Length: 425
Image 1 (cartoon, rainbow, N blue to C red):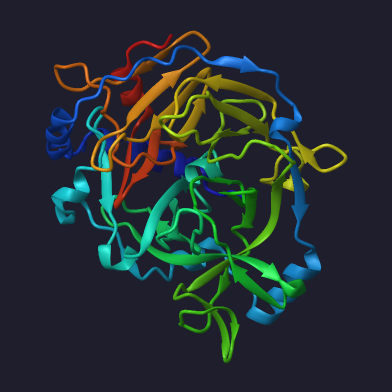
Image 2 (cartoon, helix red, strand yellow):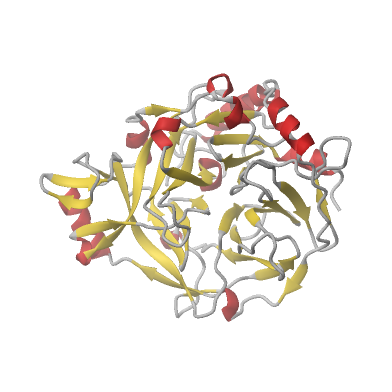
């Protein structure tokens, strides 16, 4: 995407950072009370153990949707629109903390505290389970998509069965005004019948990364790829999905994102449960973690893939002549129950889910030498992170880490996380 007005946006970015620095929110009183009654001191997992990278254990096979399939779908549905058109058509608003319930706010981190937080309308998200978050801070290094600041929040329809996830959708959030975030929904879909129709993506959205024009979403068998230049309008408001009498339906969403490709796991390959972007590497890279149960008896693996430097493959992974993407490095950690992963410099940040539904999780910072977690209270509790720990996304332009816990969407500076964790190892 051609970027314009970079200097103007950088100036505005500095103003936003100054605004955020002076408006830290008093959001954690209720969370602190809960943490005090559910204190847990976690055993340090120690340093990361490096594994041999570029092996079949992490190999992905790229499969792009044929251009003729995408063109046929666009011909039937109408010309695709971009993110800007979607932002001009938002129909819901997130609530600031004053409009959130105490129960919602208790999901926020205790230490370090969130500096920005918002809650979703319970009626609008009833029956859906919050998942991953990514932002225009990952999409472009100036933090904007065109002239706009955007957040994408993934959700999965709750079927009541963990082995049978429902439809997946993404809230496209206009984040230009920190005091007034608005959004609308786009259903994640997959073209079928050579582009004559589409089906809904049925996957628990646990990881998302938006890099350049592409949105990568974790599934049980690999990654699906979406193109933010190819947002389609739904023309029929109904509970059905796909081509219907009179037009196209997206289960009540106004927009549809049809997949443009996928990265399938090789036989026996490790499943990425959480992903994020690392702009501190060269080239930029996608980092991933698997999900090992909190009471699991084996280590959790972490690894990364390089993004392609070919302008014709913007937002896609680097592949070999056979279309395979191999990990460029991999590690093991003794941390289990990992729900979100972030890598920056030589540090890896892992959020571990709470041991109880109404508890708080743990945030670890690890490198090859050691591991540290934040502590809260006088008893040395490490249960200081958000309640239902989720994915992590770093907005480098503002220095913020974004995440989501239950009904709460929140951000806090990476620098405040590092201060809470003490000096880097």
